[in-house]
Length: 545
Image (cartoon, rainbow, N blue to C red):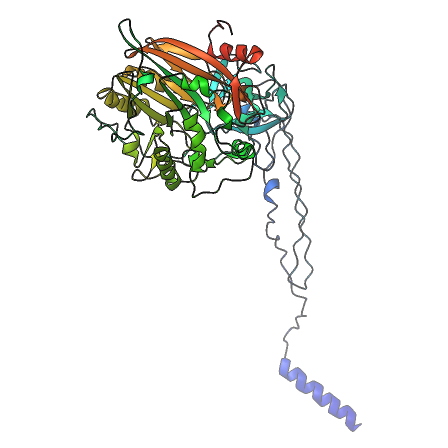
């Protein structure tokens, strides 16, 4: 009974405390469902929906040096090919950071769209690669109509320019390898040796020096090596309107590499000239291009394929013995081992009793003519090179003579004309392994003649090139090789001995004697097909053997 009374009392107390307050039940908290953050899909899927009727701009294919491919924009239009635009994006699922259940957000796939763009390809050859004009000359590379150097030149591709060419070369009618090539919307053929799969280094730049003024250039010191005078036995015959005398010129003489090995094997530095010395000695004066340096301070390479040429000074014994009187040092190999080796070359020539031109102790000195008395005439020789394998050194250092411009060449010729009766520039120019000169050669030759040159000589292409007369003055664009080891083609084995008869200061007759090189070093007088081929490239008829 007492327990019942206590329970009733407790209930009464509770009723008194809360009164009539209503009771509100507690419910679970309500969570607001917010949309998950937007999901960024990979970039290649962000190209939104593309209408199938949209024409996309064609993006050139990427061409690398390791795996060159053709760039469609370089090729003339012929056919079309579809370009697929990838649009599928992978699925992405965010990770929930709350224990509360959240719906999983799934990235949607961008709709697939295929757009067709017009891409042009060359019908033949089907396999194409990017190549570059890689002959280091300002003249560039000739694009020809056919696979022969006798076919017409369509245009000249600048040095370093990108072309599209066949993967495999074709053998032309002249036996040489050619690439079918497209450049600037024109299709033709380029010699395989003139293209490279890698972009060549930029042409070395040099700061031109102002053309020399018309002030007479002082003559070289009157030593036998600098100003030789013809001996009594070489005095020309008096006749006609004046004194008649002869000058013989030959092309590239390279006395390094395999040529040097052959001379050492035969035990004579005169060996390369054994079959042609009589022809060279017959003239009153003979000149050549000395391709490379002569120094006892630099060891020649044993690599038969080296492109840096140096020889010991002893090799000049053969040059002098052959009847050569002076050499041009203006060529792309004159600085192969630097200015010091060029200074050694000039010293060695002087010590050997040989004259030289086209180089000097400074750039300004290199522009000065070397003057020789031949047949009573003061004859000035100048040398110019339109290219260099290593660039040109500072103007204060020994250097070969660069042909920076027709104006610079003309200035040097005019200065020489002030002190001489006859001016003869010898150029190193043009494109290797072609028989036709380019516009750069022609512009330099014409500038020299307009300034007073009486004969223009040239070398470097390693092939005999056609001749020309401008204002009655002969131009020998390339005399070809004379002593060289390029036995890998018929044209590089052929050269010409050009003999010019002067009456006073004027050329009155020209005679050509073709030669062909044997055993990597030794030219002989050419006969038969070799003789006819040289006459054909020179552009004259054979008067008989």
